[in-house]
Length: 96
Image (cartoon, rainbow, N blue to C red):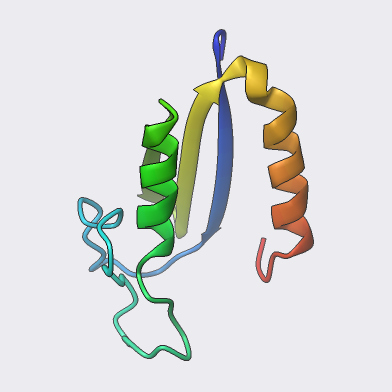
């Protein structure tokens, strides 16, 4: 993307009730079950956003076609870092 690089990750998703405006808020859990055995604490995306913005990066979320997509945009100079993060995520992924 010219001067910027994009890191993307997506998962299957089927929650039409998700509040996409609040997804980056601390403690917001989009999973309707609210069971800690099935969902997290709602802190992960808030932490990602805060760190990204602290370094001047941007984040976004897109929902469609049964998938949820998360994206971090950062300077192209960090392209190799993006590849290492991607490989680490794929290695530890439960669902592609």
